[in-house]
Image 1: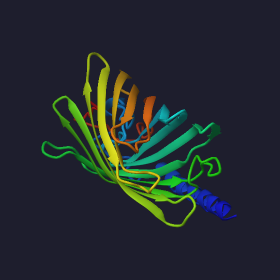
Image 2: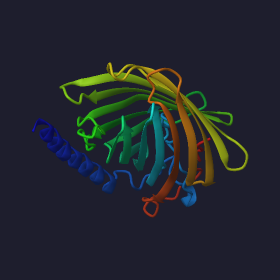
Image 3: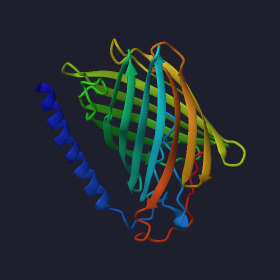
Image 4: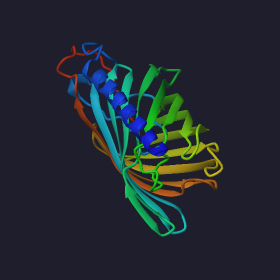
Length: 296
């Protein structure tokens, strides 16, 4: 009964948050503004967060709705494995503020001979960019997301508790043809069978560089401090290839492997980023001398 009470509170909390986000998206306070990152002459440029752990400090272009989806196969050790299909929806409701919805649509988990299937947890939040990239300083942003615990606790697909994920330092900088993203964050994870939160810090540094034609390479080093006795500190590295079919459609495939014991395991991932539409395009004023950003 206690668990049902948590689920009911999470349900009402999720609908309150969703309602606030929908109202914010439907009633933008700066819909007629000219922003530095609005699509010039209707040109939409995707801003992928995947496949890395770190996210760029620069948000999606103003007024643009963008989605990312991917498949991840994880081998934590032994014969155990897990398959995930997860996505991200992003909408730049203001010049420097982006609404975010992380959705874990399907989990297939095989642990010690037992197979479980179900929906994963959802996360809703936003990202605020408080400094645009300049000659001497990177783009800077902060991000907050809250977890809506819809994944099954009985199937061990989730904790059934609310989490708070705060990225208090996000920095992005272009140096020559290299692009760098650095994130420092703090997680408060609700304990599955007790009150209170487990807490840890996380760090990630990623770089990307264009290769021939439409291909690019991405590398990352990331790690976390100990969350609890069952989740020790670890470090891992990811390497991926990206392929840009157009400015608004980018595919990726990569491999993540632990550098220390305690990592989530080996991971193969493949996915896509697509900028769906410029929602505000027909309302805003024409832009002159736009600043065109790039992901590489």
